Amino acid sequence: MLPKRRRGAFLMKGYLVLLSIFLALPMVIVVAVSFTSASYTHFPPRGFSFKWFFHVFEEPTFVMGIYNSFRLAFATIILSNLIAIPAALALVRHNFRYGNTFQSFFMSPLSLPMIVLGVGLLLFSSKLGMGLSFWVLLAGHVVITIPYIFTTVFGTYRGIEPNLEESSRILGATNFQTFRYVTLPLIKPGVIVGSIFAFIMSFDNVPLSIFLTGVTSVTLPVAVLVYLQDNFDPSVAALSTMQLFCIILGLYILQKLYGLEKLSNLGG
Image (tube, rainbow, N blue to C red; front, side, top):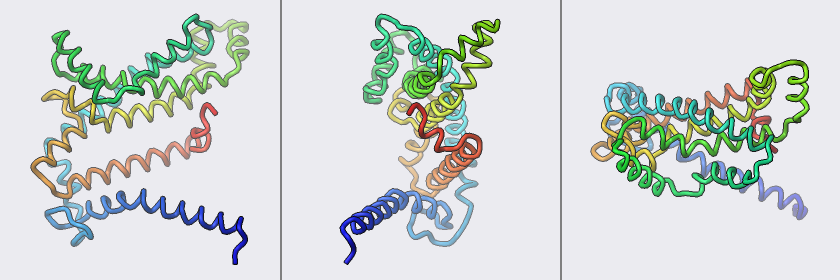
């Protein structure tokens, strides 16, 4: 009979193993299905083939969706950083009268359901006569990604001693030089983590994109939904496998460059 403490640890480990299997099993099934040689989705897969990976790049809907999603995600990261970084730096270093209100304002998109936000932005853009275009979609994605960059930069910058920037200015550096050579390198982990979250939120977004996507600005998630209305072949599984591989590769690169443990403790 195991002691009570060891029995509790054994049960906890067993729970964690079962939970890990439960979370990983859908991804394992998707990866397995993507390599099938059958012309329809089936598990366990029948045969082995890479044809569905090639089919992804032969399908015009997917190609256009991939191009638009990458273009949109990178543009979103740039604009969100240009807005969120100065706001975070200002709120940390300066005691505004309504600082908490401004902070809540920048975080407010997280409190709204994206469907509601999508409908609101659709009506707003219609009132302005802008219609559905890439720029309207970009504006919507910037709105929903600003909180992620703002939060990580705010948390990073709050842990930096003001004396470092003051010493730079005392030694003759201008405000821009202080930001370029002192502040920016110190907040770089926060910028990177926030940008990663922003990229993922933009690239995989469905509720907002489905309202703001035009004919020429169809994103990949919307393209997949349109494709699944008339097709149910393993090409969507192959596409998902490629996305999963890109995520794993990105995490590996981050681990080598910065260390995931350091990034996970950001702002702590």
